[in-house]
Length: 131
Image 1 (cartoon, rainbow, N blue to C red):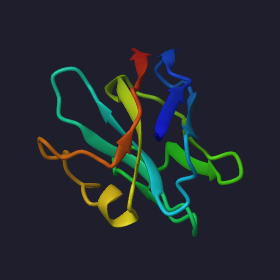
Image 2 (cartoon, one colour):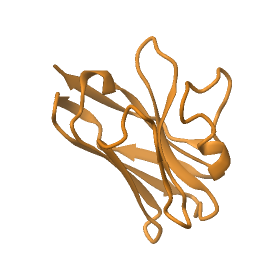
Image 3 (spheres, helix red, strand yellow):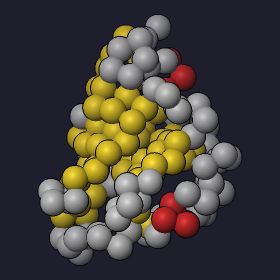
């Protein structure tokens, strides 16, 4: 059974940084891309970033490009999201996800449709940015 376990969320002031980590347990997801999506209270889910497991190609939502960096460690089966210059509008629950690259990056520019689910996802970690 595959499990994605997130860590690293918390409370930070605007302009600060946080680093989220996601560990994959149960199996190696070497054929999957890994990424993050988020959901703020009362808002739809939105794609944040993704990385191809083999080539390391990265994808970012426009709202986070230049501020967030996604990386992965294949040997350790982990993926990280470095978040800099955080803004109050980044406040959300952040979820780690895994899926085929084409599917993981299908909705980079608009909210995830209701009922759409990635193949694997974690339980989420709260990120709160105060103004």
